[in-house]
Length: 430
Image 1 (cartoon, rainbow, N blue to C red):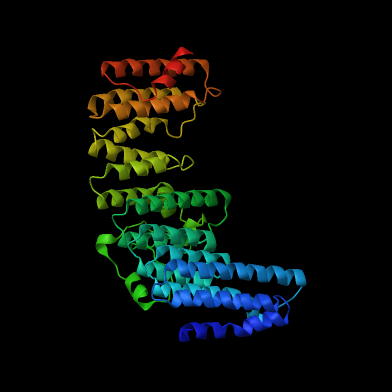
Image 2: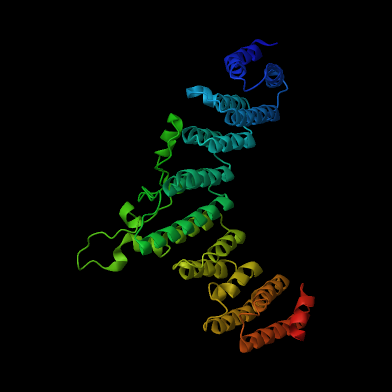
Protein backbone atom coordinates (compact mmCIF):
# COMPACT_ATOMS: atom_id res chain seq x y z
CA UNK A 1 0.00 0.00 0.00
CA UNK A 2 1.36 3.43 -0.94
CA UNK A 3 2.10 5.92 1.80
CA UNK A 4 -0.42 8.41 0.38
CA UNK A 5 -3.25 5.87 0.30
CA UNK A 6 -2.39 4.68 3.83
CA UNK A 7 -2.37 8.27 5.10
CA UNK A 8 -5.86 9.05 3.78
CA UNK A 9 -7.27 5.72 4.98
CA UNK A 10 -5.92 6.23 8.49
CA UNK A 11 -7.64 9.61 8.64
CA UNK A 12 -11.00 7.87 8.29
CA UNK A 13 -10.44 5.29 11.02
CA UNK A 14 -11.89 7.35 13.93
CA UNK A 15 -15.08 7.88 11.92
CA UNK A 16 -15.48 4.17 11.21
CA UNK A 17 -14.84 3.30 14.86
CA UNK A 18 -17.53 5.76 15.92
CA UNK A 19 -20.01 4.28 13.42
CA UNK A 20 -19.32 0.78 14.78
CA UNK A 21 -19.56 1.92 18.40
CA UNK A 22 -22.99 3.48 17.78
CA UNK A 23 -24.03 0.30 15.91
CA UNK A 24 -24.90 2.19 12.76
CA UNK A 25 -22.80 -0.31 10.80
CA UNK A 26 -21.77 -3.82 11.80
CA UNK A 27 -18.17 -4.95 12.11
CA UNK A 28 -18.40 -6.80 8.80
CA UNK A 29 -19.81 -3.71 7.09
CA UNK A 30 -17.00 -1.57 8.50
CA UNK A 31 -14.46 -4.01 7.08
CA UNK A 32 -16.22 -3.89 3.72
CA UNK A 33 -16.13 -0.08 3.75
CA UNK A 34 -12.40 -0.15 4.59
CA UNK A 35 -11.66 -2.54 1.71
CA UNK A 36 -13.70 -0.43 -0.71
CA UNK A 37 -11.97 2.79 0.32
CA UNK A 38 -8.60 1.11 0.05
CA UNK A 39 -9.50 0.02 -3.49
CA UNK A 40 -10.50 3.55 -4.52
CA UNK A 41 -7.48 5.19 -2.86
CA UNK A 42 -5.13 2.91 -4.79
CA UNK A 43 -6.97 3.65 -8.05
CA UNK A 44 -6.71 7.44 -7.68
CA UNK A 45 -3.09 7.18 -6.53
CA UNK A 46 -2.10 5.17 -9.61
CA UNK A 47 -0.22 6.77 -12.49
CA UNK A 48 -3.02 5.96 -14.95
CA UNK A 49 -5.73 7.48 -12.81
CA UNK A 50 -8.69 9.01 -14.68
CA UNK A 51 -11.33 11.58 -13.65
CA UNK A 52 -13.88 8.77 -13.65
CA UNK A 53 -12.00 7.08 -10.81
CA UNK A 54 -12.56 10.11 -8.59
CA UNK A 55 -16.21 10.29 -9.64
CA UNK A 56 -16.70 6.62 -8.80
CA UNK A 57 -15.09 7.18 -5.39
CA UNK A 58 -17.29 10.23 -4.72
CA UNK A 59 -20.41 8.37 -5.84
CA UNK A 60 -19.64 5.50 -3.48
CA UNK A 61 -19.17 7.92 -0.58
CA UNK A 62 -22.44 9.71 -1.46
CA UNK A 63 -24.34 6.43 -1.36
CA UNK A 64 -22.61 5.45 1.86
CA UNK A 65 -23.45 8.79 3.48
CA UNK A 66 -27.10 8.51 2.39
CA UNK A 67 -27.27 5.03 3.95
CA UNK A 68 -25.69 6.33 7.16
CA UNK A 69 -28.32 9.07 7.47
CA UNK A 70 -31.16 6.60 6.87
CA UNK A 71 -29.88 4.24 9.53
CA UNK A 72 -29.32 7.07 12.01
CA UNK A 73 -32.92 8.16 11.50
CA UNK A 74 -34.29 4.62 11.83
CA UNK A 75 -32.22 3.84 14.93
CA UNK A 76 -32.77 7.32 16.38
CA UNK A 77 -29.01 7.80 16.74
CA UNK A 78 -27.50 11.26 16.92
CA UNK A 79 -23.99 12.38 16.09
CA UNK A 80 -23.07 15.76 17.51
CA UNK A 81 -21.12 18.59 15.97
CA UNK A 82 -18.78 18.01 13.07
CA UNK A 83 -19.16 14.24 13.31
CA UNK A 84 -22.58 14.55 11.68
CA UNK A 85 -21.03 16.12 8.57
CA UNK A 86 -17.98 13.86 8.27
CA UNK A 87 -19.43 12.11 5.20
CA UNK A 88 -19.97 15.35 3.31
CA UNK A 89 -16.54 16.62 4.31
CA UNK A 90 -14.92 13.45 2.96
CA UNK A 91 -16.75 13.87 -0.36
CA UNK A 92 -15.73 17.54 -0.56
CA UNK A 93 -12.12 16.48 -0.01
CA UNK A 94 -12.34 13.88 -2.78
CA UNK A 95 -13.59 16.53 -5.19
CA UNK A 96 -10.88 18.95 -4.09
CA UNK A 97 -8.20 16.37 -4.83
CA UNK A 98 -9.86 15.54 -8.14
CA UNK A 99 -10.05 19.13 -9.37
CA UNK A 100 -6.46 19.77 -8.36
CA UNK A 101 -5.28 16.80 -10.38
CA UNK A 102 -7.68 17.15 -13.33
CA UNK A 103 -8.34 20.87 -13.35
CA UNK A 104 -9.08 20.75 -17.08
CA UNK A 105 -12.08 18.41 -16.71
CA UNK A 106 -15.16 20.66 -16.83
CA UNK A 107 -17.63 17.89 -15.97
CA UNK A 108 -15.69 17.18 -12.79
CA UNK A 109 -16.01 20.83 -11.74
CA UNK A 110 -19.75 20.82 -12.49
CA UNK A 111 -20.31 17.65 -10.47
CA UNK A 112 -18.41 19.23 -7.59
CA UNK A 113 -20.57 22.37 -7.84
CA UNK A 114 -23.79 20.35 -7.96
CA UNK A 115 -22.81 18.47 -4.82
CA UNK A 116 -22.15 21.79 -3.06
CA UNK A 117 -25.62 22.91 -4.13
CA UNK A 118 -27.19 19.72 -2.81
CA UNK A 119 -25.41 20.20 0.54
CA UNK A 120 -26.40 23.91 0.59
CA UNK A 121 -22.76 24.81 1.12
CA UNK A 122 -23.03 28.24 -0.48
CA UNK A 123 -19.65 29.53 0.64
CA UNK A 124 -17.81 26.56 -0.84
CA UNK A 125 -20.00 26.67 -3.93
CA UNK A 126 -18.89 30.21 -4.64
CA UNK A 127 -15.24 29.19 -4.30
CA UNK A 128 -15.77 26.23 -6.64
CA UNK A 129 -17.44 28.44 -9.26
CA UNK A 130 -14.64 30.99 -8.97
CA UNK A 131 -11.96 28.32 -9.37
CA UNK A 132 -13.74 26.76 -12.33
CA UNK A 133 -14.09 30.10 -14.13
CA UNK A 134 -10.53 31.11 -13.35
CA UNK A 135 -9.22 27.96 -15.05
CA UNK A 136 -11.75 27.98 -17.92
CA UNK A 137 -12.50 31.64 -18.67
CA UNK A 138 -13.05 31.06 -22.40
CA UNK A 139 -15.84 28.49 -22.01
CA UNK A 140 -19.02 30.51 -22.48
CA UNK A 141 -21.35 27.83 -21.14
CA UNK A 142 -19.63 27.96 -17.74
CA UNK A 143 -20.39 31.66 -17.34
CA UNK A 144 -24.04 30.95 -18.13
CA UNK A 145 -23.98 28.08 -15.63
CA UNK A 146 -22.51 30.35 -12.94
CA UNK A 147 -25.15 33.01 -13.61
CA UNK A 148 -27.93 30.44 -13.35
CA UNK A 149 -26.59 29.29 -9.97
CA UNK A 150 -26.45 32.90 -8.77
CA UNK A 151 -30.14 33.32 -9.56
CA UNK A 152 -31.29 29.92 -8.30
CA UNK A 153 -29.23 29.71 -5.11
CA UNK A 154 -28.61 33.34 -4.10
CA UNK A 155 -31.56 35.02 -5.82
CA UNK A 156 -29.07 37.69 -6.87
CA UNK A 157 -29.69 39.25 -10.25
CA UNK A 158 -26.70 41.53 -9.72
CA UNK A 159 -24.33 38.60 -9.21
CA UNK A 160 -25.72 36.82 -12.26
CA UNK A 161 -25.27 39.94 -14.36
CA UNK A 162 -21.70 40.20 -13.12
CA UNK A 163 -20.91 36.66 -14.24
CA UNK A 164 -22.44 37.18 -17.68
CA UNK A 165 -20.73 40.50 -18.29
CA UNK A 166 -17.37 39.20 -17.13
CA UNK A 167 -17.86 36.21 -19.40
CA UNK A 168 -18.39 38.54 -22.35
CA UNK A 169 -14.98 40.04 -21.69
CA UNK A 170 -13.35 36.67 -22.16
CA UNK A 171 -15.78 35.29 -24.76
CA UNK A 172 -16.66 38.35 -26.78
CA UNK A 173 -17.38 36.30 -29.90
CA UNK A 174 -19.50 33.63 -28.17
CA UNK A 175 -22.94 33.85 -29.78
CA UNK A 176 -24.71 31.77 -27.15
CA UNK A 177 -23.39 33.94 -24.33
CA UNK A 178 -24.70 37.13 -25.94
CA UNK A 179 -28.13 35.56 -26.41
CA UNK A 180 -28.20 34.25 -22.84
CA UNK A 181 -27.25 37.67 -21.53
CA UNK A 182 -30.06 39.25 -23.54
CA UNK A 183 -32.46 36.65 -22.14
CA UNK A 184 -31.31 37.52 -18.63
CA UNK A 185 -31.97 41.22 -19.23
CA UNK A 186 -35.44 40.41 -20.62
CA UNK A 187 -36.26 38.49 -17.45
CA UNK A 188 -34.85 41.29 -15.35
CA UNK A 189 -36.97 43.93 -17.11
CA UNK A 190 -40.01 41.74 -16.53
CA UNK A 191 -39.19 41.61 -12.81
CA UNK A 192 -38.66 45.35 -12.63
CA UNK A 193 -41.97 46.00 -14.37
CA UNK A 194 -43.80 43.60 -12.07
CA UNK A 195 -42.16 45.13 -9.00
CA UNK A 196 -43.07 48.65 -10.13
CA UNK A 197 -46.66 47.57 -10.67
CA UNK A 198 -47.02 45.80 -7.32
CA UNK A 199 -44.85 48.10 -5.22
CA UNK A 200 -42.57 45.24 -4.12
CA UNK A 201 -38.81 44.94 -4.46
CA UNK A 202 -36.89 42.94 -6.99
CA UNK A 203 -34.77 40.26 -5.33
CA UNK A 204 -31.04 40.78 -5.53
CA UNK A 205 -30.90 43.96 -7.57
CA UNK A 206 -28.41 45.72 -5.36
CA UNK A 207 -25.68 47.19 -7.50
CA UNK A 208 -27.45 45.87 -10.57
CA UNK A 209 -25.93 48.19 -13.09
CA UNK A 210 -22.61 49.94 -13.04
CA UNK A 211 -22.96 53.27 -14.90
CA UNK A 212 -19.31 53.14 -15.88
CA UNK A 213 -19.53 49.83 -17.68
CA UNK A 214 -19.55 46.24 -16.53
CA UNK A 215 -21.17 45.45 -13.20
CA UNK A 216 -18.93 43.16 -11.15
CA UNK A 217 -20.41 43.61 -7.70
CA UNK A 218 -21.18 40.48 -5.74
CA UNK A 219 -18.46 38.23 -7.17
CA UNK A 220 -15.98 37.47 -4.40
CA UNK A 221 -13.85 34.47 -5.12
CA UNK A 222 -11.08 35.21 -2.68
CA UNK A 223 -8.45 35.09 -5.41
CA UNK A 224 -6.22 38.14 -5.66
CA UNK A 225 -5.46 37.60 -9.33
CA UNK A 226 -9.14 37.42 -10.26
CA UNK A 227 -10.04 40.42 -8.13
CA UNK A 228 -7.29 42.42 -9.74
CA UNK A 229 -8.56 41.52 -13.18
CA UNK A 230 -12.13 42.46 -12.21
CA UNK A 231 -11.16 46.03 -11.41
CA UNK A 232 -9.61 46.70 -14.79
CA UNK A 233 -11.62 48.92 -17.11
CA UNK A 234 -11.38 47.54 -20.62
CA UNK A 235 -12.61 50.34 -22.86
CA UNK A 236 -12.90 48.13 -25.92
CA UNK A 237 -14.91 45.52 -24.05
CA UNK A 238 -17.21 47.76 -22.06
CA UNK A 239 -20.97 47.55 -22.32
CA UNK A 240 -22.15 51.03 -21.46
CA UNK A 241 -25.38 50.73 -19.50
CA UNK A 242 -27.60 53.63 -18.41
CA UNK A 243 -27.29 54.84 -14.84
CA UNK A 244 -29.83 52.99 -12.73
CA UNK A 245 -30.12 53.37 -8.96
CA UNK A 246 -31.13 50.61 -6.58
CA UNK A 247 -34.32 52.42 -5.59
CA UNK A 248 -35.34 52.80 -9.22
CA UNK A 249 -34.73 49.14 -10.03
CA UNK A 250 -36.81 48.20 -7.00
CA UNK A 251 -39.69 50.17 -8.42
CA UNK A 252 -39.55 52.83 -5.68
CA UNK A 253 -40.55 56.39 -6.49
CA UNK A 254 -37.97 58.99 -5.63
CA UNK A 255 -38.91 62.49 -4.51
CA UNK A 256 -38.89 64.67 -7.60
CA UNK A 257 -39.63 68.28 -8.30
CA UNK A 258 -42.73 69.33 -10.20
CA UNK A 259 -40.69 70.28 -13.25
CA UNK A 260 -38.94 66.91 -13.68
CA UNK A 261 -40.28 65.04 -16.69
CA UNK A 262 -41.28 61.37 -16.48
CA UNK A 263 -39.03 60.30 -19.36
CA UNK A 264 -35.93 61.61 -17.60
CA UNK A 265 -36.02 58.89 -14.97
CA UNK A 266 -33.40 56.18 -15.66
CA UNK A 267 -35.85 53.47 -14.60
CA UNK A 268 -38.05 54.41 -17.55
CA UNK A 269 -35.10 53.84 -19.89
CA UNK A 270 -34.64 50.36 -18.49
CA UNK A 271 -38.29 49.49 -19.00
CA UNK A 272 -38.13 50.89 -22.54
CA UNK A 273 -35.46 48.34 -23.44
CA UNK A 274 -32.43 50.60 -23.70
CA UNK A 275 -30.17 47.92 -22.20
CA UNK A 276 -31.43 45.31 -24.66
CA UNK A 277 -30.72 47.62 -27.59
CA UNK A 278 -27.18 48.18 -26.32
CA UNK A 279 -26.61 44.45 -25.83
CA UNK A 280 -27.84 43.67 -29.34
CA UNK A 281 -25.66 46.35 -30.94
CA UNK A 282 -22.61 45.15 -29.02
CA UNK A 283 -23.28 41.55 -30.00
CA UNK A 284 -23.56 42.21 -33.74
CA UNK A 285 -20.52 44.48 -33.52
CA UNK A 286 -18.52 41.63 -31.97
CA UNK A 287 -19.78 39.15 -34.58
CA UNK A 288 -20.00 41.01 -37.89
CA UNK A 289 -21.40 39.19 -40.90
CA UNK A 290 -23.30 36.62 -38.82
CA UNK A 291 -27.03 36.77 -39.64
CA UNK A 292 -27.79 33.76 -37.43
CA UNK A 293 -26.88 35.78 -34.32
CA UNK A 294 -29.34 38.57 -35.10
CA UNK A 295 -31.98 35.98 -35.98
CA UNK A 296 -31.37 34.28 -32.61
CA UNK A 297 -31.97 37.62 -30.91
CA UNK A 298 -35.20 38.10 -32.88
CA UNK A 299 -36.41 34.61 -31.92
CA UNK A 300 -35.60 35.34 -28.29
CA UNK A 301 -37.29 38.73 -28.15
CA UNK A 302 -40.49 37.53 -29.80
CA UNK A 303 -41.02 35.12 -26.90
CA UNK A 304 -41.31 37.95 -24.33
CA UNK A 305 -44.74 39.19 -25.33
CA UNK A 306 -45.42 40.72 -21.90
CA UNK A 307 -42.61 43.27 -22.15
CA UNK A 308 -43.81 46.75 -22.98
CA UNK A 309 -40.61 47.36 -24.93
CA UNK A 310 -40.94 44.26 -27.13
CA UNK A 311 -42.15 46.11 -30.21
CA UNK A 312 -39.32 48.62 -29.98
CA UNK A 313 -36.53 46.05 -29.72
CA UNK A 314 -38.07 43.84 -32.43
CA UNK A 315 -38.23 46.82 -34.78
CA UNK A 316 -34.57 47.53 -34.05
CA UNK A 317 -33.49 43.95 -34.77
CA UNK A 318 -35.73 43.79 -37.84
CA UNK A 319 -34.23 46.96 -39.25
CA UNK A 320 -30.73 45.54 -38.81
CA UNK A 321 -31.68 42.28 -40.53
CA UNK A 322 -33.42 43.85 -43.52
CA UNK A 323 -30.68 46.43 -44.00
CA UNK A 324 -27.65 44.18 -43.52
CA UNK A 325 -28.99 40.93 -45.02
CA UNK A 326 -31.63 41.92 -47.62
CA UNK A 327 -31.37 38.66 -49.57
CA UNK A 328 -31.11 36.23 -46.66
CA UNK A 329 -34.32 34.13 -46.45
CA UNK A 330 -34.16 33.64 -42.69
CA UNK A 331 -33.68 37.37 -42.11
CA UNK A 332 -36.56 38.19 -44.46
CA UNK A 333 -38.75 35.63 -42.74
CA UNK A 334 -38.22 37.49 -39.47
CA UNK A 335 -39.30 40.67 -41.27
CA UNK A 336 -42.41 38.89 -42.55
CA UNK A 337 -43.58 37.56 -39.19
CA UNK A 338 -42.63 40.65 -37.17
CA UNK A 339 -46.11 42.28 -37.49
CA UNK A 340 -47.72 39.12 -36.06
CA UNK A 341 -45.58 38.91 -32.93
CA UNK A 342 -47.58 39.48 -29.78
CA UNK A 343 -50.88 39.89 -31.66
CA UNK A 344 -53.41 37.17 -30.65
CA UNK A 345 -55.63 35.85 -33.43
CA UNK A 346 -58.70 36.84 -31.42
CA UNK A 347 -57.89 40.58 -31.46
CA UNK A 348 -59.33 43.05 -33.98
CA UNK A 349 -55.81 44.11 -35.01
CA UNK A 350 -54.77 40.64 -36.16
CA UNK A 351 -56.30 40.80 -39.70
CA UNK A 352 -54.44 44.06 -40.41
CA UNK A 353 -51.19 42.54 -39.08
CA UNK A 354 -51.73 39.50 -41.31
CA UNK A 355 -52.15 41.72 -44.37
CA UNK A 356 -48.88 43.49 -43.56
CA UNK A 357 -47.11 40.14 -43.16
CA UNK A 358 -48.44 38.92 -46.51
CA UNK A 359 -47.38 42.15 -48.23
CA UNK A 360 -43.88 41.79 -46.75
CA UNK A 361 -43.71 38.22 -48.02
CA UNK A 362 -44.42 39.44 -51.55
CA UNK A 363 -41.59 41.96 -51.26
CA UNK A 364 -39.21 39.37 -49.79
CA UNK A 365 -40.08 36.92 -52.56
CA UNK A 366 -38.62 39.35 -55.10
CA UNK A 367 -35.38 39.81 -53.10
CA UNK A 368 -34.39 36.42 -51.69
CA UNK A 369 -31.92 34.16 -53.45
CA UNK A 370 -33.20 31.06 -51.63
CA UNK A 371 -36.96 31.26 -52.15
CA UNK A 372 -37.58 27.67 -51.04
CA UNK A 373 -36.73 28.42 -47.41
CA UNK A 374 -38.81 31.58 -47.49
CA UNK A 375 -41.89 29.77 -48.82
CA UNK A 376 -41.60 26.87 -46.40
CA UNK A 377 -41.17 29.20 -43.45
CA UNK A 378 -44.19 31.37 -44.26
CA UNK A 379 -46.36 28.34 -44.99
CA UNK A 380 -45.51 26.99 -41.54
CA UNK A 381 -46.60 30.32 -40.02
CA UNK A 382 -49.96 30.19 -41.81
CA UNK A 383 -50.51 26.54 -40.92
CA UNK A 384 -49.79 27.26 -37.26
CA UNK A 385 -52.40 30.01 -37.31
CA UNK A 386 -54.94 27.77 -39.04
CA UNK A 387 -54.32 25.13 -36.38
CA UNK A 388 -55.96 27.51 -33.90
CA UNK A 389 -59.29 26.92 -35.62
CA UNK A 390 -61.26 27.19 -32.38
CA UNK A 391 -60.11 30.82 -32.02
CA UNK A 392 -60.62 31.87 -35.66
CA UNK A 393 -63.80 33.44 -36.88
CA UNK A 394 -65.20 32.46 -40.27
CA UNK A 395 -63.96 35.50 -42.20
CA UNK A 396 -60.41 35.22 -40.86
CA UNK A 397 -60.32 31.50 -41.59
CA UNK A 398 -61.43 32.20 -45.15
CA UNK A 399 -58.81 34.92 -45.59
CA UNK A 400 -56.04 32.61 -44.36
CA UNK A 401 -57.02 29.92 -46.86
CA UNK A 402 -57.06 32.50 -49.66
CA UNK A 403 -53.55 33.60 -48.68
CA UNK A 404 -52.44 29.97 -48.56
CA UNK A 405 -53.88 29.29 -52.01
CA UNK A 406 -52.11 32.32 -53.40
CA UNK A 407 -48.83 31.07 -51.91
CA UNK A 408 -49.30 27.74 -53.72
CA UNK A 409 -49.83 29.52 -57.05
CA UNK A 410 -46.77 31.68 -56.50
CA UNK A 411 -44.65 28.63 -55.67
CA UNK A 412 -45.79 27.05 -58.92
CA UNK A 413 -44.84 30.20 -60.82
CA UNK A 414 -41.40 30.05 -59.20
CA UNK A 415 -41.19 26.32 -60.01
CA UNK A 416 -40.88 25.33 -56.37
CA UNK A 417 -42.39 22.42 -54.46
CA UNK A 418 -43.53 23.17 -50.92
CA UNK A 419 -42.05 20.92 -48.24
CA UNK A 420 -45.41 20.48 -46.48
CA UNK A 421 -47.59 20.36 -49.59
CA UNK A 422 -49.75 17.49 -48.26
CA UNK A 423 -50.76 19.47 -45.19
CA UNK A 424 -51.44 22.51 -47.37
CA UNK A 425 -53.64 20.45 -49.68
CA UNK A 426 -55.68 19.21 -46.71
CA UNK A 427 -56.21 22.76 -45.46
CA UNK A 428 -57.29 24.03 -48.89
CA UNK A 429 -59.68 21.08 -49.40
CA UNK A 430 -61.75 21.94 -46.29
